[in-house]
Length: 373
Image (cartoon, rainbow, N blue to C red):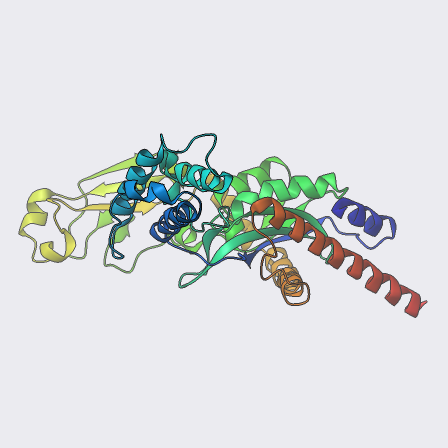
């Protein structure tokens, strides 16, 4: 249905660009976030209540409940005891409600699942961050939109998912909808190495500024250490030159993070041990090691592109449009909060919302054309 609205926009001559703007907007879960301890406690409590109602004779087998201040581990141990004592007591003749609650508790204990869940009702929702000190509990709508403000692709994830990981999928969905993608415009979240490499391999320009951690890595730090060109090495604030340097290749690390190539400079242990700045400079080390990050070829190309007038013009003129679209879906169409529970239902809500905004946009543009005519 979303692709059909895009197809109509193309047929009516509304979409003329080969750019997409990408961003992610959060949607709060219908349910409040709870700690794993609170969730497990609530589940075992509901199981006991059902037993009191339908099979009260089983209550004599209940283990002693932990205190309200119990840790998650203590709550897990109690719940495991509860499940164990009820194992032989719950049979085919047992009330369906009791069996259902019993199986739910068992499921939460399996493979430490409880430690990862943040809501007893909405298990798919997760905690994410709008900024460093502003979090939310729910989902993310990853959106691709043309400069004409027609949404061409969507990815719906739980709240903790990183924005940049969805870029390739959004491009694929946009192409499937019938648009040739030559440019992707977004914020810093989309300038990761994998996305830059994807863009370079597929002739897609990534118009997203690189993170300051990357671009500042090669610049001189304001810590007194400086590069001495003639000696081709680093000099410390006390005037001592590094005695050895080594090149560390770029590599992938655990968790899929990419580490840029680095030059590592080592200083003389004896000199460092006698230096008046050793307490401040060395910490627990015996000798000082100073590392300088080097931009990879992928990042160098992107840095050159960032400094062009075209890059900055596109970013300034187009990027804000998707923020207005996200605001529209939240304020006018209720996408600020999930209507139902679960990721699959969240997808339905998000897709229907963006289909409606596409239809509205097409009608508005066609009405303007008729008015001008």
